[in-house]
Image 1 (cartoon, rainbow, N blue to C red):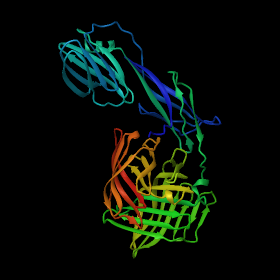
Image 2 (image 1 turned 90 degrees about the vertical axis):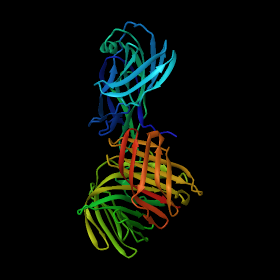
Image 3 (image 1 turned 45 degrees about the vertical axis):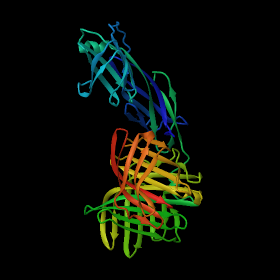
Length: 506
């Protein structure tokens, strides 16, 4: 299973020697030819990012370009080739080699010493990121140097030995070539991403076409009248006295029932209530935004930069109430690339999220003690569709990272509780979006029937996360719905944050 690549493929031929920088420029357009403003454009391996301007134009600057330089041959009694971090070394006689790797600024990165008999040997060098590195090799009274350009961890090179020459002279005499396939990823909310192949170094003036998906706003912010439909919120609010509370809140269109839960991580108390169906309405504001009234619960989006959720309940004798305003701070995140994913019975579901809602004010009352809301971070899901009861067994995770990124994972199960398939969506701190279906969820213990305390691995992202509940007892009837802490990584990036997890039908 692989990541769905929403990318433009660029083939770059690089020859290692003296370096200079080049720029890749172009324009992101919609199918009608108009430029698209605000699209993220990233050269993945080099980590170079630009955002399109009002005309849809972008420039990726400081892309490493290498001149092809020809040099006279040098005396050869040792030779080597490099491929993706592996040195293939051939020596003519038994020798002791010392291999030291430096940055161009001279910072030492690694040191390896080996005694080799005559023949061909392989040496695995430590993993390195994108950049230019100098490998200084000593054998007997000779010194050898390889200057390597690594783009996205892919690199190739050759070098030869010589004697009686200085370090700088050898650097200039090294001749090596590398062929790197890198990607330009283009991401824009409301658009499907495109894939285009380029096989030339002439990358100026390229055009990348994005097609709008068929979800429209504000129409699809509102309820659709589907068999299954809800607006869902989860996250953390901060109060004026410095406390944090986890909040989970849902309104279902049919029959306008709702759920309201409050988690206190310090006291490890969970207040929850399922609120029965009301004679509700799924209305709209004059601007076309949702105004959903479910009796004791309400969701109002008015004006366009303010979302308001209201609910009141008696949770096992403890009155709980909230009236909280939130402001969107990032684009809508579409799942399944086009805003649709299959549910457990393979019937499609419309699905998108707002992952970075900033609470701007309001109040939360627990057992008649009122808390003033001053901040936090909330997540909103909108989902709708005609799936059947067979599509309702799932494990769902919404990870919100401290760097602003977010990850959604949706895993479905069969009648024997075995995972069948799933979807994930990852938006990094720069706003670039990645999609996939390959992930593994492993629970380390149980709370009642619910498997909890998870390790989640995503091979396509080279990612792994530990998800730990702030406490175990966060259950509604037939449902585990709780606040968690998150640590992990995507590649070399270490991430921390919070999550909500929902386990259904155990």
